[in-house]
Image (tube, rainbow, N blue to C red; front, side, top):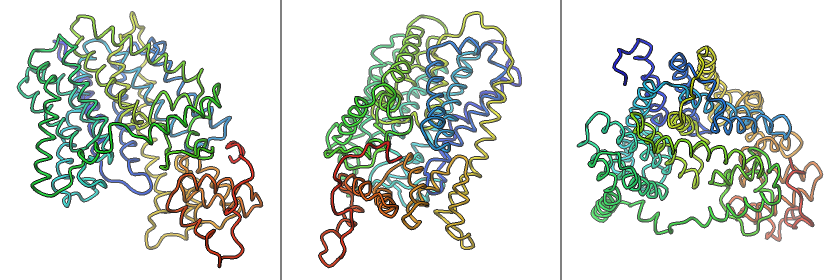
Length: 567
């Protein structure tokens, strides 16, 4: 930090960043049907608060608009909005995606516009937030694995995977990525504060929690930490040795958990997870299918948010039998949905931005440790994005964008700008998040009605008027209304969100009811490919000789339908 006494605004602003980074991953309370929606809304509101508090500290944000990373996010921001206008994407899905990407662009520009002294203040606040989020998540993970009966679901989430920690984000891979961020934050804080003896215990806690998560992505991330220790010779000797020791910490953690499992008889999630192999055949299968769709739609892709729609309704006899709404690989996802030119431009700009951040981190200077830590935050979540899709969640995207802004060079000779735009954007994020909570309750009552709730049809109709979550109400309509025109219209809207076995079955029945027998058979053929218990039970009627007449779906379709004709 600078030697000058911080102003009152500068004293409060770091707290906003700590809140934005720390609180969203720690919220356990949720309501059906979206398990982590409140975490994402809390992230948007928290970063909105950070924008309001840091607006006056960002006099040069305008020059950041021309940075490669900002242009890349701007191109992405166009995608969901154009999909709503020209490709039929439901507005509830397009507006939600645009809000998250727009918030990411805003925090990127704010971070990139900070002066060197304020960058240091912001970086330390961000790292303190990640350290708090990670530390509390470690405690939550210990409860989930060793004292699972204490997990009440409201303060501490219950793990649905025996022997594995999931934190309050409810996903092992998300917990592993949070541990990587905590490790980076621990290096930065302990180096800056001179608390070097605290680093090794903190890193061991992170590594041990990754073992509790049994995340294969997390194990690769531990290798990245060791590589950081090899490459970054400007770190202190103690920090480098601690980072280099992380693979050894992994081995010790594994041994301790194996010993505990043998003594107690409890499940050791990591051992059973790795017994499946280092890779995932289903993930490789989804990548092959995604590439086939990309080759078939090379220029404009299948459309933003339409991968699941196109993949589920395209014949792939050897397809993975799980219902995927994402390719689990960021470049592949952009390529299949946006097409090769658009996705190529976005990825090239992001690579350009990362290259500039790398060069800035490699140079000597007072802010070099800050830039290297910020770059490591981006690189670790970038690695995760090659195997999962964490950046589709606000609580990962927004800190990553802010860290990238800190890693990028500030604009030279940036002209002063009014803080009002960022104050307005921040206020909109806070107000929009509060509105979304209210708006979401219109859908919650469909799936978890109170004793004095309105009839189901009325609750669905009210939910279909939701601005951000109408597609969730459409799912209820599609699967509970009698097969026919109303159910079919709702199905075609909610199918952009996620197609599963239940929806495919009801969709086929609605097509049959409206006279499209061939379409009904085509969807039934797709359902057979997934080999799902719901579909298998439905198709048992085709083997029942006493059931007459046999349903049309027992006969395969006579031809292949283009998935676009079913929209």
